[in-house]
Length: 314
Image (tube, rainbow, N blue to C red; front, side):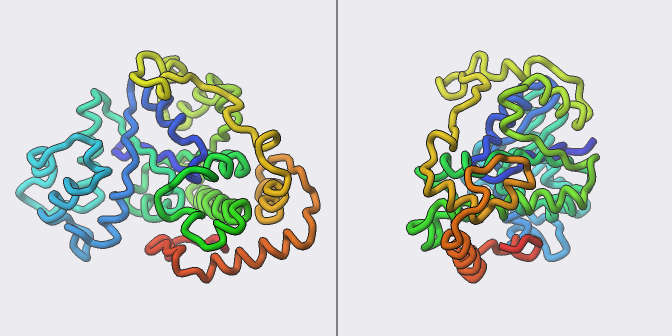
C-alpha cells in the first residue's frame, strides 16, 4: 500500500488526537502531525504547475510553513524526493514526504491526522485513490463544550458575528457541516476506504474498537495501542483513555442545549444521540434557521477551494 496510508478526520475538537496517539503506538504505522499545508499548496499552486507537477520552488515554501517544521525534514531530504530527472506529480511528491517521515519513525505505513480534512475528502481521494479515511465522530454538544472557551484556527464558529451572540447554534451548524461532509463522502467511497468511529464507543470499549479499526486498516491488532500513554513526557500525554472528560448533560446549560438541538437535532437523531428537547420551542427553531441562512451568505466562512467540493447545505 502506498502512503498516505490513512487520514484521520473529524469535526475539530472531536477527540481525533486521542485516536492519533493510539494508532501511532501501533508498531507498524506512524501518524504524522496535522498537515493543512497538503491541500493548501496544491490549491494555490505554490511550487506546483497547473498540470499538478512539482517545481523546486515548493521546497522553500514547505520549509517556511510552521506546520511542516514538525516533521523535522531538511532541504537535502526534500530535494532527494524531487529527484533530478522526470517530472514528479504533487501526489507522488507528498507520498515521498510521508515515506521520509515513516523512515524517521522506523515504520513503513504512514498516516495523517488533520481534523479539518473532513471537508477536503474529495481532493484527498483524487490525489490518493487508495488512501483510507477514518471519520471520528463525537456528540456535537460535547464538541461545543470543548470549543466554547478555546481559540481555534480558521475556519471556526468564532469567525462569525453570530458566534458572540449565539455560540451554541453556530457551533451546532459548524458541527453539522463537518459531520455531514464526511458522511457524504463515506457513501461515495464505500466501506473499503471509509470507516466511522464514535468517540463515546472508543473511550468505553477501547480494545474492541482498536481491534475493529486494525481490521479495517489491514493491520494486526497490537496491545501497544492501549498503552499509548506509557512513557510519555508530559502529564497531558501520559493520560490514559478516559471517559467522562466532558458531559453535556451536566455541563451544558439547558438554554444552550435547546439551541443546539434546534439547529442540529436531525443529525443527532440520525447518529443515535439522545436529545433533551424532542421539540425545541419555535422561537429557537426560527432563530437557528436565520443563523443558518446568515452563515451561508457570510463571506467570512471563506471555505475557499473547499466550497467547490462541499455538497452539504449550511
